[in-house]
Length: 446
Image 1 (cartoon, rainbow, N blue to C red):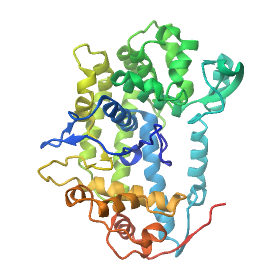
Image 2: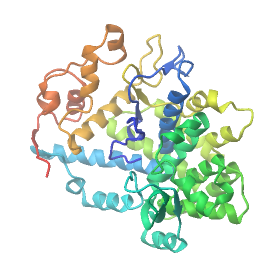
Image 3: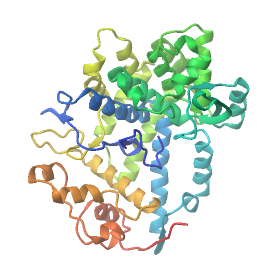
Image 4: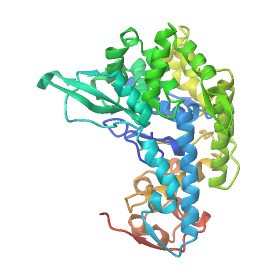
């Protein structure tokens, strides 16, 4: 999931913005928190539970994988550079392009996006895929996603190198496979791209695990430890095949211990890299929000302990026959990894927020301010990201308003938020970074 895009994850537009530790759910939700601030799912339907678990897996992917951690850290670095750029200008033209801030970051982002692969595809039906080993080799040399062929039986067509398999296909396939364990009917709603690419690839190249959801989840998780997840998926699956490893827990432990990354001119195993990179991520968050964090440090510490043991709580749960995954997965995962800001039409849940009115952590509000401000300065839309929530707030009952905020919308929310006089998330963020009094010019889209 990109730290620079709003990501639409399902046909009903549930979206997860994990770089800001923020999950957005379409429509209303029956998710609740109890008096201790723990997630309660008692009133959620199977479908609703599965959708939220899908989104929660994306939240986890940014905390427990090197690719995800690095994407989040890069977002924080770019945001800091963006604020510095604005502070040094009296007239600011928006949206600000990444290449304007720093050409090196722009080149890095262009380079890393070559590994993302395809996110959406609707030109043809995809009944089967075909993987070419030579294409994997070329993809590795060129550090890009892997091109694979497709078969469209309905139209009697075969197309070589038609779609690209990379980061998108892996994170969505992994979340889909976990969701499928809760709600098997999701197969009727999720398209082959990007949600079922891993299953299709395994049917073609790794038939021994094509019906083993647990093993496919493990291969996806391991692939996200590398800077080119699409290529890494095949490397990990080949390794498991060669070593005759048919258990995802064992595979994950081997991959974390036996593979290395270069960190400050020193080769360190993946499990050590997770620990070091998590610390860098937390430090980068504290830098951009201007204060120390507490809740996120607790979450990061859990992830560090897990990495040190070369284990995955998710894999341990799905392989444990005593674990009632359909009933307890969200509560068990959130007790360990925490949970982000959760937003739906009727609920607004902050970490450590309980029905007794316990104050939410201020770090969550500041992270939300960063998200809103970044999208306004570098996004295409002139409307504040929080506008619909604030407008909903005005039309809600007093009870609903207490769950949200007391912001009031005005005409400035649609175009020139810096001229708004009322206190709201956007104006507070602009003031916090000392950039509210700049002269902003909205560029027309070309």
